Amino acid sequence: MFSVSLALSCALFAAVLPASAQRGPDDGAAPTTELRFGVFPFYDAKTTIRVFQPLAGYLSSELGQPVRLVSAESRDSFLAHALAGSYDLLWTTNEVYLILRDRGAASALARGEPSFHGIVVVRADSAYRGVADLAGARIAAVSPQSVAGFLFLRGLFADLGLDVYEDAEVGFPAKIESIPFLVLTGRADAGVFVEHKYDGSAAYEKAMHSLRVIARSVPIPQFPFLAASGLDPGAAAAARAALARIDGSNGFERAFLDELGIERVVAVGDDAYDEFSAFYRTMRR
Image (cartoon, rainbow, N blue to C red; front, side, top):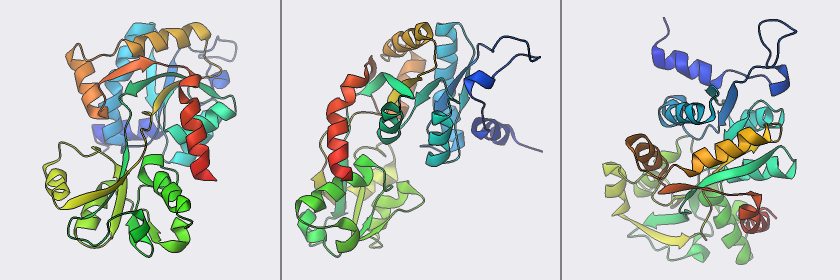
């Protein structure tokens, strides 16, 4: 028998149909008014439900429409669903957002603040003092697409005339939360991840006392909340306004902000990411 959490996880990652295919009980019925809130699989299914289900409930109440939380099993499947129009509202990585924006599939509604940074850490007692010293080093990073968890370091290597893939040994561990501990135990010479990502973990904070930051990225904007291009403009405007009201003034909002490590949510448009887009493209060259 499925547990409640497993059943919820299966429902969360189940494939969803594009808006045009969402129909009522018979072929002649009008499209359902349910909104699909697609959350990028940044967390495991259980954590995604815990963090974002209350937000889905809040948006449902504010918009006067049922909002169903959905996700996907991987970055690629999430992107494919988003491009197919399977989501109405989205929370996704900056990298996926830029792809959707370039293809006219979604636009920005809001984002958390403040921005964040990526960091490169080494053991406090290591001989590595800067990025130039990492030639030949074993580096544990988040993913090839992560700006804060890899790409900014790739850009720093390029600025030195180096190629991080050719001039270092790069690995992307399945459990990204293990990165600081891989460095601490000597299984990696350097680690790349989001600064303050694991604040609140006693084990992480203890590990950081034995690690040293040798590089920090420029400010990187928080992952955006998006409206799919097919979403009714009135619903998109209402969602933007509802998200921008999240300021930590009640228990639900405070818990949600704390989970994401942000202080507030503010309304934004696509132009708020123009500078970051230019920076991102230089790292991808």
